[in-house]
Amino acid sequence: MKKTLTLTLLFLATKFSLFSQVMPSTDENIPYLVTFSKQADKTWGDDDNIQIYFFTIPKDIKTPFFIRVFDPDNGGKYDENRGGFNSKTKYSVYGGKGAHSNKDAQAIDPKGNYNSGSLLYTKTFGEDASVDDKWFNFGPINPLEGEFLPEFDGNVFKLVVEGLDGDDGNLYRLSLSTSKDDNIKVEGGNIFTYEYCLRTADNVGSVSHLYPFISKGITAVNIHVYDYDEEGNIRIISVAKKAEETTIEKGTNWEASEHKIVADEINTSLDVQFIKKKPVKNNNITIYIQNQYGESLAFFSVPIGGVPKFKYKIKVTK
Figure 1: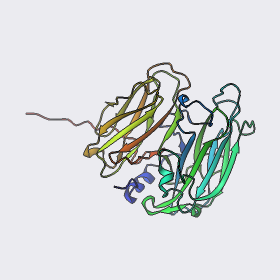
Figure 2: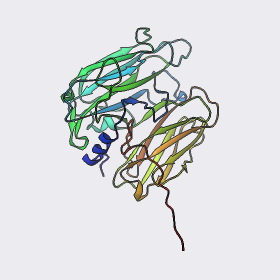
Figure 3: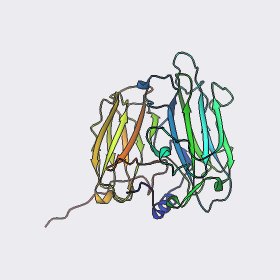
Figure 4: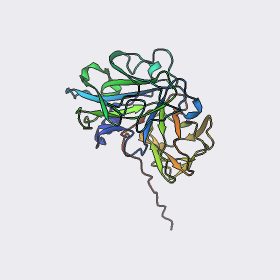
């Protein structure tokens, strides 16, 4: 069983790539990605201080592109201050052989050769007013510098975000763009990750969304959430599920909830919803989802096949 996508499914990704590729996306309704530095308390929501993101570029794209980071520094308007900003965050862009195909790069725990591939760019930020509340560009990047993978029908690049010394939380966003001045989509491109560390919305009643893709052969998924802090409830919407609740509630450490996959859900995305029920401020959580084989599913900023909608079935009786 492989967790890679088929060419047909990548066609669907291209078909439904209607907007600029930003992570978190508008559909996800997530304020920020989060990476804490190494001295941070693990109960603040980041379990390992490293996040890994992948960027897919279709093989027919030949023009340069940019990987953009919003508010990459540690300090200022958005970041989580723990008694005075003292942190640094390192961003590293990789292409070439092994950038994605190396299994360490796809693992939940960043061990071994997770920074595999050819290093193209790297930059470390402390507190830096020049990039606070602004976009920073890596690039221009030649699409041919990525790792070509047939299962993605294109080139894949990797961004490793590492919290270095300090104990603050770095909140940021990402974009895949053809422009260094604005977020202009790369046609058919996408951003994905196997483990999502994020800031939940503060407003009670808000709903955040994650979109894992269910490929052929998956019969069950295990949803793992770290440090949920009894914030609300988590449910699954799909083409076959109107609202299936998970068993995750407290989440002060890792909690898991298993769910069966039915035939109608194969080759579609799930909508894993996080519903805010309590006024928990500045809550950061980490999520990953695995199939019945223990293989991690990718979360796509542009959901494969589009945002799933429950399909009502009307039974007619005589």
